[in-house]
Amino acid sequence: QRTRAAAGSVCGIVRLPLPGASGMAKTELSPSAHTILLLARRHADRLRSPRLTPEHILLALSDPASDTFAQLLEDQGILPSDIIPIRRAAEERLLALPQTSRPPTDASYTAGAKRILDLAFREIRSTARPRVEPEDLLLAYLEAAPSVAAEQLREVGLTGSSVREWIALRHSQ
Image 1 (cartoon, rainbow, N blue to C red):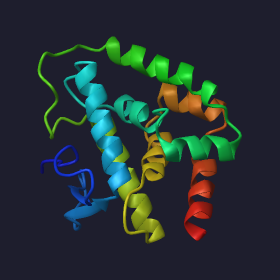
Image 2 (cartoon, rainbow, N blue to C red):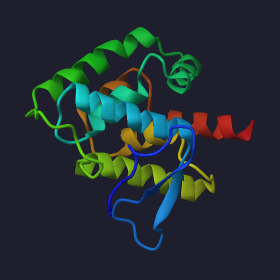
Image 3 (cartoon, helix red, strand yellow):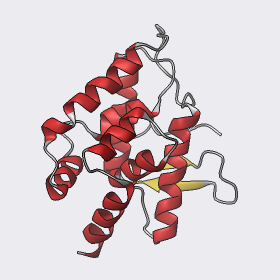
């Protein structure tokens, strides 16, 4: 199935087929989660990456303009300046990968990026929330296969359990 994360309007709900999921053909992304995936796509384009990777998703999630990420950092007592070297290292890893002159297509997600989407969808189903939000993507990023950036985020205090608690508190208000 083709992933439609980069198509459609940023303003509306985007239906995204679950990578590798059976029984549930589509699930919804919130407009803000859709915007994160569009921004990840722009990072992939800018870095001339042939496929969208978890690092592109991290760059989008941790963008200084992200209100959700900024609020999460503030609530966790993490300084935005603690994230700058993590973003820089992720970008350097991406620049070391083979580049292409063609932008990635809608279906060109790496297995790691698909895993992040799949984990985010599983998370909202397990909590009975209707849509994937940016914080679900961050939680999935932290809980997906080990990565240097995820470990660095954990070292500054951003863990899967702290993000999950933050999400629960945010959605209980």
